[in-house]
Length: 255
Length: 255
Image 1 (cartoon, each protein chain N blue to C red):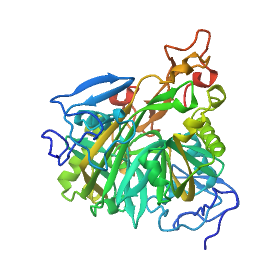
Image 2 (image 1 turned 30 degrees about the vertical axis):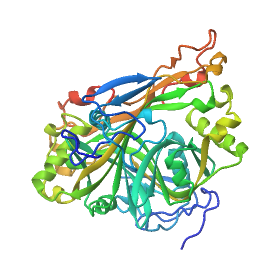
Image 3 (image 1 turned 120 degrees about the horizontal axis):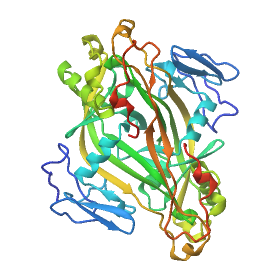
Image 4 (image 1 turned 45 degrees about the horizontal axis):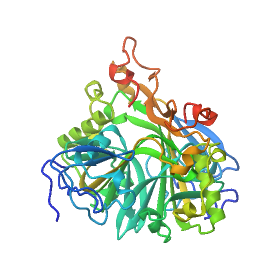
């Protein structure tokens, strides 16, 4: 049985994997072995988002999916041209239930996507290397979202500008207010797409390595090497006007 | 005219974009505006790897492509199931001209890929945010590789173990020598694929923002916010045997 979830991504039928958890009325965070398992406003899975392997790493929870999308700013978008899959990295923004992509009006990716072909938008946050005692149990701590959907072009200049602001603020909150906004000509040279998510799922692995019981006696180091995309010290452009300071929103470290 | 390049990725016809640089006998690094442009052992482009936009950000040079692949460890692999594109994050390894993927023998991605369907393997390294004075000229410094090809399953247990070592060493050099190697049963539960690259290209953006000349007078901060995937302090598993120290290869910071 499939039905929409009121406060989900628009048009999304979020479903939980067939082999996983039943629906509950609100988000619950459980710990089972060392994976966090999100249950919540979830529904039965379909073929394409069934999380076949290690289904306890999977989630179709809306808040989980939004949280991962919001911490990322780079997506890998997949689409076909004559049966050949393309995977292209691109920035994106989220505004409630809407995802936005942008680029040159001449971009092949955007020109393909705007025809409404089936697409897949994937976001991955790397959290750490998981080093077990056995080669077999090595893994990665990560959070990923795989979203299936279609895109359509936004033509209205005002809506385009709004979507561009969303992408900019998603990338770096506070920046938009400081910059020279796009001119009419620049807006024309920019293609902006709204990506409608039909179905999405999240996968999360967290916590220490899990070895076979007999391997815990081995004198081998095991543990986690945390990883994070971090910001370095801003480098001012050589032509910045005297007296213009580095804005506060670029001074923070960590993303 | 297309012909193979002797020391390239096996079976690869590396080509330069039609609108870009001519072939030269060895790698040259040029600077034009603020993009590094690689020319070198390059050839004429085909439809699918033509770098249509900003072709001076593009490269089909073998060393450039290998360098980006080697600094990354996470790829996003695209393939189709009944016309629906899937983009799945996965670890990978490179050994000379060969790329390897692995996962559970039950993995849907690997089971699809091993049928030899057209696939796309994309790797992206984020180097920084590029903040211009105008919204329009904001950008990202990055290095990416898009590789088209097909995969085939490796059945021979010895070759599988070798490929797994390649993936492990690609991820964290020195680790393989310390761990318990895969048992026969574990090898059976692991699918290992060799990805043959038919065609690949790299895109690179580097350097400061480039604004329209008249915008340089604006009192707006512009510059680069460098970004990097960094390693944190290793966290030992609670059951590591007394006296087992954190190995040197996990103590370094930066990736």
